[in-house]
Image (cartoon, rainbow, N blue to C red; front, top):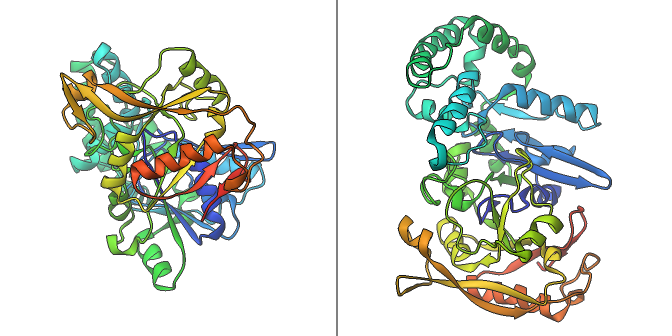
Length: 419
């Protein structure tokens, strides 16, 4: 299950729905820069690291090796769940997952500040610097916590380098190692019962015919290789990242569900061809409660972009779509949908790879009739207004794959199931 836009598509509630039939729910990339919100009755659960499948007693939630982990956040989520009556003891954590360290958060903050108006728009959670160390082979992993000598040696080596950057480049005070050693080794006892070879765990589950749901964070257009670089995340939220980040082969995946809002949003900087700066955009923000789960930042909103959605289908090999927040469009007399772009006299029906084109393009809109009916009680496709059904069918025709689910409200049961 992957985000087909710039993240914030409502993947948490989708995972929650699919997890009813799953045995394992696996988070395979990203960190606590992505949040999933689940609404159960009057309760809202905001999760940023623990997979959404934790809400079901029969599901084994797994944090795989492709995730970067802030231990304070993880242990805080575990405590929150336990305090609200959800048993988190089934959670399994890869010993190969890399840790977000205090110097990663510090570097993320000062680097963004020094970039000024060229800033990426990160969440300042240390995600990028942690992945940088991972690929520079100087990262610290979960398994290092269980060997104090190795942990201390690795920390002192990398902190020596980071302090030079902090003091000489960014004019910051150096960071000491003793407090970090004490804090992080103190987490080891709490984590030990959760740590496992998650690649083998998932492989064994598949061999036994169990259902495994891979839960992506962020979205396709934020992929480090295939997104709107450099305004992207530091991992691969696309479907291929599920195989790499969890340690299974690509043939193990037989369905890829793309999650997309009935409109589109993004947080942070970067190009956004269908962004709205008018009353319609403000309405999407207000009615859709478009504020980041993790950061609380106001999201930028715009009309649905089918050029980008067709691109998401291609790079993920999407087999089907889950459209969320269709109810937010109720009340619009006319709904616009971007089916192409124009830039410097050229027309684009495929997602342009040149950053210059993407920044300067204008969307080519198709206008469809809107509806004013309250659709939040619809559970069958035929119960939706004719205009809403035609909107969904237009998406299917343009993208070339079926829309098998449509959410019509934030509650667990407010979903039209077509397959």
